[in-house]
Length: 610
Image (spheres, rainbow, N blue to C red):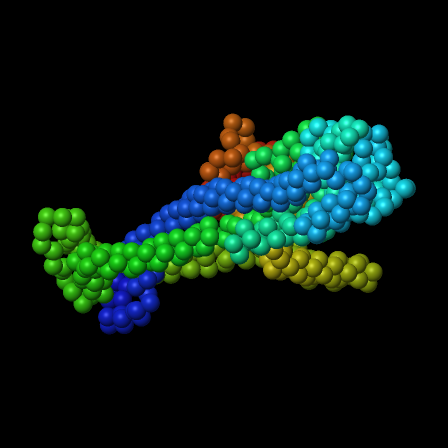
């Protein structure tokens, strides 16, 4: 008996409460999805705000750092220029007293010694006259390094000059030379003083300590063409004009004006003043900006997380009525409730409750109607089952009857013919055996034995045909070809066949019945017709679509040129034609037989198969 299927969870208890962490699953709870969405938005906003704040802070810090570096460079340049100006002023004072000292050589030497005692960092002091001869010196000037012909000497006779003097042509720095004009009895001379290069480096280091303020900055001094004259060891070997910022790793600024503008020069060429640079590690200088970036990012993320948690709580509070409605709906589905309570109010939750209540009512009505329909269907199924069982019994009885008829036809086609011929032979021997000779009797017995052997062979062949699959394996077309070939080999009759290739697809019971009918017709031709040629054709009838749903109509014709017979004359004990008509009737086919004595025989069979 059929019965209505229970709804899911209809007999189950209420589900156990979910763990607390399931409330954070956005796929299960709308409040969690809202919180996570807000958290994602806040995180994205935090990243954008942090990047913007970091870029702005880095820009402001870089501007402030560059301003600080430029101020530092200006201070260092001013301090270094002041130190050089102090020494030039002392040399000018000595040069102004030179006419008073030029009376005797010892007086001139004492004046130079007094200047060196006042400015001990001046390693050597000397005076040249207008012709370039030494008037006095604290120590001999190397003869291998003549000063005559130096272009800056002519300018030094008019204005103070500070030059970078090299002792040979291999760019080895010897000293800084300070030169001021000096009046002599013969004309204008030059007062010279040597300032060691180490003094310049030491002065730069002192200025760095004085104005650096604890910030790790570096001072660099460049000459004409950007060649580094003084600075950290890492930059002293750089080529002229090289990038002093280290590819952006340092913030680099220079003093607004060259050192001692108009007074300092290298080689004495005008406009080739020295330039003081200050640089600082960009990573160290921009560290406050990065700290600001991290602080902003952490702060905004923290605020975003708190906002997300607050959103989850607020959403759960706002959706509590919807959650109650969902629980009641699950209880109705599980069979623990018959209806739901419509939430109060006029908002969306109330509208959802009203719609859900109507759906549940409609669903319950349909469930009751389905139960009634199932009951009616159970009754109908029971009645149909009984009827089908009766029809099955009738079909089994019909199948048994058909099988009996088939066996009867098989026995008629084999044993009946052989036994009838054997019976005729035995009767003839019994009546005339006494009159025959021994040889004639042996010949008649041999014929009788042959008839019995032929009958036995035919019976075995019929049993093999009944047990074999035949058409079901190969199809009607190939089985007809095999049957005709065996007939030709056995009887010696010439066979002509024209079978459509589509007949190989005929493999059902109808095709098997058609094969049995052709086998019976060929057996009759072999025994009774005495024909020389047999022709068989099997083709589908024209005018029918091969791809349709209905079985195709086929036409089979079998003709011979034998002695023929009169179809209207019946023979007692012969059931061949009767069996053929019964088989055609079973197929729902049309059987036509055309024959006359001496004119052969033509059989046409139109049937449906496919």
